[in-house]
Image 1 (cartoon, protein in one colour):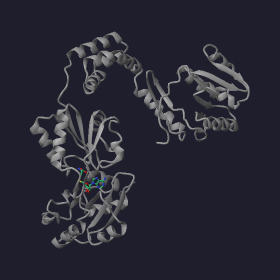
Image 2 (cartoon, rainbow, N blue to C red; image 1 turned 120 degrees about the vertical axis):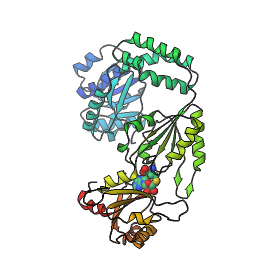
Image 3 (cartoon, rainbow, N blue to C red; image 1 turned 135 degrees about the vertical axis):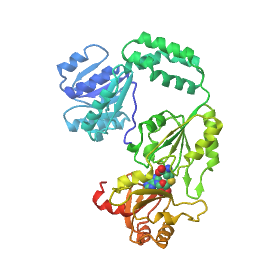
Image 4 (spheres, rainbow, N blue to C red; image 1 turned 60 degrees about the vertical axis):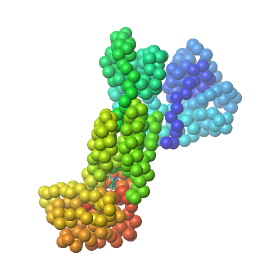
Length: 457
Ligand code: SAH
């Protein structure tokens, strides 16, 4: 992030606006709406500004800007149509450690004014760091339609009921459950349509009928192969309400960033042959946290039920009577195949596809090679990079054509995706020369040849 998003309390604080035209007026409106005492300094001050600031503790100084105008202010906005003046204001303000926004010249100052969707007390503010104002406008239009007008009323009502709810539930988690239930239920609907009394009555009823929640829940969620746009809606919803997040190395940073910000994060990462926490310990931790009443997100790369040990984890939960939900994710095979332009099946090339682990418990590679020789079957190896020379050799030894195409997709679907193609006979050289690293997906079969035509990213 280039800027730290923050909401400032400027009520009754002096804020300086240098400039007296329409652009200045736009900023003055916001400052006044936030309760600031505005000081306007400009050679000319428009009649509109004069009228707008006619009442209240505001100052209108019709004169050129000088550094004394910065005395006693907490925030500065340079909004003249003279770039030189704006820059001078910005420089002097920053010398005094003041935050200053220069209109239409974000880099000159050290603060940007965000685009705003106002449902006070709910305010959504966002910015493109001054890089793409049109994009900000489009986003704003979207958000305007997404956030019902009544959100402000709902938030205000929630604020009024806060103490009552606090008195009823001493545990923060219990309060959170309560609010989640209320804010997604009929009371919220009533508030949104303006029936605040009805909404309040429902909140009080719910409060009287809700008992303290003690047993939590585990969400076993597939986070997909890396690109956060590939998450399901359900995954996102649960990610944003979990109290604790257990994640491992395969979950991409971008996906993790979408989890609830104030959740506790526990890394239970796994590296080949170097398990940070034994599986049994992870299973036990899930049970323990859920029994403390927490909503626990077990976030997995790809799909939890495909080479993800998801089955083992929920077996323990099931036997301990802990409630859980499983959310499928896009498995690496699908994600990598799509983003590499390699359909896993195709009527002219492959009638079946087989997902195989390339990492065997005893490293014996005692796979059923004879079942992998059919040229119309695509083979997809997970965790196969280390063993790839042996895999290729075994396939050739058992009779699969050495010219069979093969693709390696490293960090598929992410910004760092790399794709290499070759044949069973040549791929090992490519691994060495290109220094291919895990996580890498291996696709073997005639479908790989389609990539030349179908690659799109
Ligand atoms: N449950 C996961 C797979 C876990 S096994 C899923 O459904 O995708 C881990 C292996 O998955 C890695 O060794 C690698 O072969 C593959 N993998 C996972 N994410 C990948 C990615 N973004 N790009 C390439 N391969 C990936």
